[in-house]
Amino acid sequence: MQWALVALTFLALSLPASARMLPDFVPLAEEHSPAVVNIATTRERENPHRSQMPDFEGSPFEDLFERFFGGPGGEGPRGPERFERNSLGSGFIYTEDGYIITANHVVEGASEVVVHLSDRRVFDAEIVGKDPQSDVALLKIDAENLPTLKLGSSSDLKVGEWVLAIGSPFGFDHSVTAGIVSAKGRSLPSENYVPFIQTDVAINPGNSGGPLLNLDGEVIGVNAQIYSRTGGFMGLSFAVPIEMVGDVVQQLREHGEVTRGWLGVLIQEVTRELADSFGMDKPAGALVSRVQPDSPAQKAGFETGDVILSFNGIEVPNSSALPPIVGRTPVGAEAEVEVRRGDETRTIIVEIERLPEDISAQRGGPQREAPERTEPQSLLGMVLEPLDAERAAELDVDGGLVVRDVTDNPARSAGVRSGDVIVQFGGHAVDSVETLEKRIEEVGERRTVPVLVYRGGNPTYIALRVPRD
Image 1 (cartoon, one colour):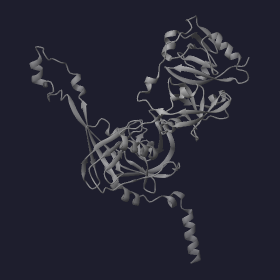
Image 2 (cartoon, one colour; image 1 turned 180 degrees about the vertical axis):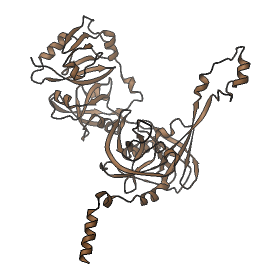
Image 3 (cartoon, helix red, strand yellow; image 1 turned 45 degrees about the horizontal axis):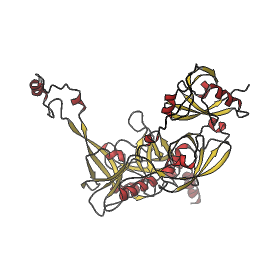
Image 4 (cartoon, one colour; image 1 turned 30 degrees about the horizontal axis):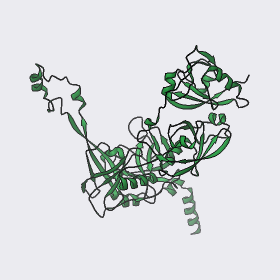
């Protein structure tokens, strides 16, 4: 008997770790699928083919054209002026009286929203509110005693944890897929205020708005996007963290809209080269490349070149971490912001304001004079000439140097491009080649220098290594 027990124990230990630890998803799927809904929407769109057809109204050919192709608004080969388009998505019930969470893009532009429950009941839904920036929407159906899902927490979520998604990919109701958390705090190019949860859970069209569950059956995210070169699943899925979803939903229920905190700075990542140019031990924080006019940051004394290290005691490990932190800060609240400026670290107190609906309106400024145009000159592998007054006014800068050509290093290796406008070198303004030469002489032992350039109208820092004499 003892030998048998030893053999069984050895057999169990010899099994792969995945076989011993693979979770049982059956109870999760059975218990929580009833609270997941299928959402069908109807969108009214213009018929693009009608605009491509010739207009014979009032011409001798009007009767002939109407006879064969249908008149204005007719149903001939041109088709109707407007048509309805149907789409499918997912969502989940989070209150027994019929509040449903889904993704904003599932219901965006919908003229009709219909919710299908797991028990085959169908309800017309009211859109309580939408928030495009977080891609979250809140619906309401007229029903009682509905099954619900519990909102959990994604703050303690670990990379490598098992997660489960339930939704309606391609219209197949209550499909269940599983995977692990691949990363947290992901920033996507089109989304500044969402620190996405990245998973390898299979998500496809129709899954959007559905829940991402942990092994306790709690919702820790709302499935929102996939990364794909083909339109199909490629192993990269992104979900909105449930803490953000909960805050958005609460505001939508109470106010019908969402307000976010606003600091008023344009930021970029601190690379290893830029960290070296700023005298930092390692890359960290968010580098301020521009302070918006009349913004909270400008009023509080932020400067271009500041590196934001923490916000209200929360560490800012990289630039993508800052917008969600600021966005969650209540409007009117004061925040303590730790910044590195030059070789010093200081704390700035700033009163957070509401994020403007049109941030682009914050750009621009008064007209300024700039140096008159002179003949181009070469320096540091660049052909340079002063910025003219009209272009300086467009960029809202006092002056700068236009890079007409990049001929050699160090400019080429630093990534300088033709058309860049250099406005700062080592934290100092430059408006002439002579000024730039003077700044180069002042570099001293620190040979990698932060250079602020405008590229395509947007400010960005690059690190340029000045050759030693």
